[in-house]
Image (cartoon, rainbow, N blue to C red; front, top):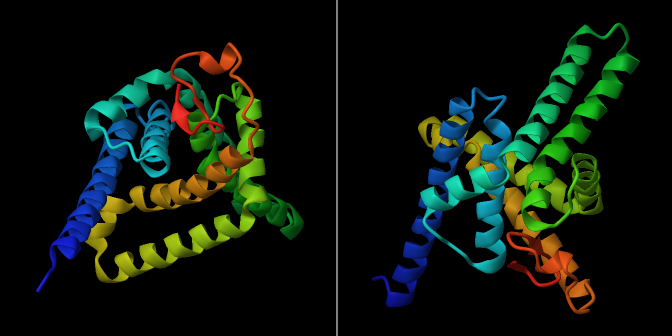
Length: 224
């Protein structure tokens, strides 16, 4: 028989699964409504922002309201970031399939991996830090991904394994978690990395920039 503690743990797990699935559906809806180009960036930012608050600070506000709030908060910067990543990916993929030499194709495969790392971490960087400017956020995402390369590899391996299992044995379930699974994996990685950055950061008094609203600072681990 289940004990009360076991029942509560199961309940928390099922609620977490539901939350990830619902975020996945909201991401799909927002991306489709934005015709992909105008939707994928803001939708990805909204998911990253919600997961950051959930994983690092234990905040679980109503999913729909929080998602829409994050979607609106940084809509145009996230749209620009999503457009840049889509354009870069399209160029690189085209070069891979139309390259005139294996060396050119290899270089573009490496470039695609780099773009993948940036795409995985740039929206958490936008959500969890006060770094501004597209080029700075891209550099920070790349440094974060390469600096925690072992976690990136572990997360990628875990995602590939779970997605393969679902695609093989439970394809309908994969539809509910196609984006939620990798997003949750990246959220788990950034929880570890950002947590360490917060512990290592100096505890000097906040500057006027640090007290501005709606910005999150790793040194404090809370929304400002």
